Length: 289
Image (cartoon, rainbow, N blue to C red; front, top):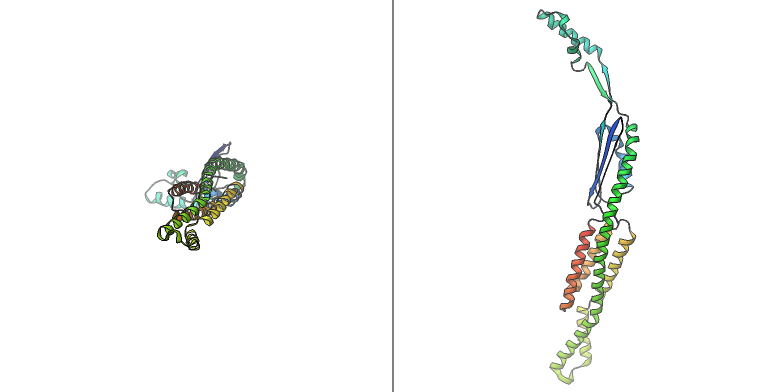
């Protein structure tokens, strides 16, 4: 079981560049992946995305990759024709105001827009060679962080699930007591009204009708079945989060029905305990991948 929250940071430096990778995530129903790269490395996004999607299925994951180059990546070329045109124009201005053309410095010509052209040249594969192992390490650290948090979540979830098992067992033990209570109640009412002439068949019929209305046997069976299914998901499915949410809804339905049919303060108290444990599970399940 993994948590959807995690964090990792890795950094490496060489003579040519410094690269840092930061990965962090929070809860999300699905995988919401954002990769922030320097614009000149956008071609690498699909490769990085594929690596992440092999390992992660749920969570809002933000990845920040920063690169600092220590060597120039620019190629500078000169537009000679543009330089000649600028020089000619400057020469005409100098002659018009009575200045010597010798006063026109070279720095003034090359400072004109378009005379010198600097174009960055990035070797994407060279960056990938440095980035890939660093990213792989950061991703493994990130996954390990999610696993550690997942272990803490699992411990708490299994404790709450054990409490729900106790509640279900309590309801099951109380079921015969409830049936006996209804039978005694109806028998007593008939005897009060009819004395020794009470029809036993009528008593049994009324008792059966009362049990149909208030029995919780079916709800207990379904509750225990859902609890076992929840335990199976938590122990066998590496990414149980979505299914856990569905099962919690089903468990909640059975507990609510038991509560609505209940006629005993002891059962009512246990219903409250069960709902509290279930709410804790539902809250924690939102953090599970």
